[in-house]
Image 1 (cartoon, rainbow, N blue to C red):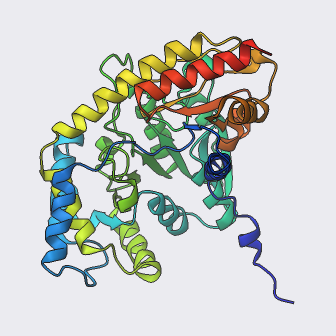
Image 2 (image 1 turned 180 degrees about the horizontal axis):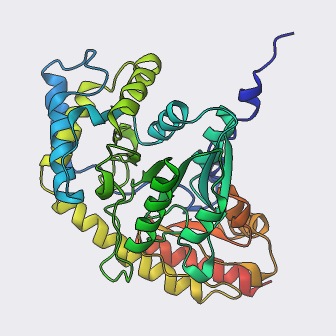
Length: 391
């Protein structure tokens, strides 16, 4: 009898897509569903970026390209890094990838051995734990506490480091809570990584999505070593540029690690489509006004969502300072996370993600993605309010 591998048995995937599938099934049955489960901007990709891809296609840029990425895109990324993070990476530190999610897989695969440990926030982006489990690496979750606005506490990280720790993962702005770490917190975690001579993976996919009223000044740990020693910066175009379907990202890391990640990319996917990369060049070099406008709209949506959530019976919600997620506490509704999410989907037609999708310390919470219109956010709050008041 043929059997699946042990590693395949450990795969979990991204469970929020299971909520999406159930919501779509209810829609096919005629139920009105408001979608707050998936982290996908509802804006279209800016037209100048789309036009750049059209132009590349018309020019015949449809063949293989260099596995590590086209020179023009890597130079553009280096230029942006100078402006945003204060240093210019060498081109051999940059790797163009099919989205940012794959960068996490490449980094874990090439930097950590089975049986070793990686410290991650809990709750956190679901792919961290799923990839680590698949690779036979032990995830060590550090609880993010509501009283600390869900920011990762360096003291907790320090206590969790062992002789088996190979990497620390930080994510700021954070999925699923929207928290933004302070400069001091990031600096201290970098010092821990430096003292123990381990890697620090900084997931900065939401780096542009910080709001003007944030009380937390944030930074990238890459400023300390310019990604030459231990820092790995995960980044991509999906969120800030509304390019989730394009699957384009650029990772910055120590050159020896980038080389091995590049070989893994070459082995598994060959390269990123050249016309997609040309769209990335335009995204980085073209007008940023559409991006600023999207972020301002997300700020308005956040404000509406947080006010509304805090008015729901039994619900309270910390105001997130970045990304496009809210992580309300629902413990006083008398429901657990799964019960609350199921009730809202089936009775209110509001699709949310249960907090435990993101780790064991997500129990008592749900995630709401406010990458939706102000009108739909208001409708969603009203529907949830009606259901909770009728219980």
